[in-house]
Length: 165
Image 1 (spheres, rainbow, N blue to C red):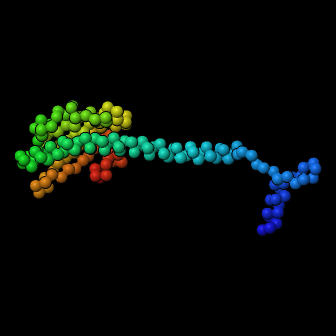
Image 2 (image 1 turned 135 degrees about the horizontal axis):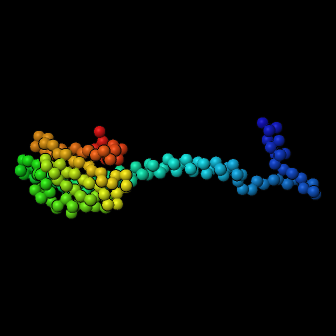
Image 3 (image 1 turned 90 degrees about the horizontal axis):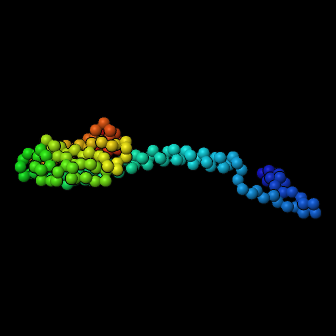
């Protein structure tokens, strides 16, 4: 062990013309070290960008679900009062579908049977432009239970956990 460290010490020093022992100093990084760092950063970026895309799309889908909360409450209230689900926004007592909009939502529409259809548009990610999220009510012994499904554009990994199969 001591012998190895002695060779290292001998390799790292040199003698000046006056005979003084001077230790060599390494300055900066070698090209290969810099290339390794750049490669590692590239690999991390290749993994992080798709994950961030999924995160931002899931946030936009959740925005639509939150915007539909008012319609869910109106449909539930109508059902509790009338014993049947409303067939449109006016019957449910809410604004017209085109008036319920958000940053990522073009409309929230109540359709036959109390279904609520959230349509994505405006500033939404281009991968989900025109996608719809459908909330379906069901009578659960006097209370209303909601199920949600996405269309072909809204893949399962983008849906909120409550909507995933």
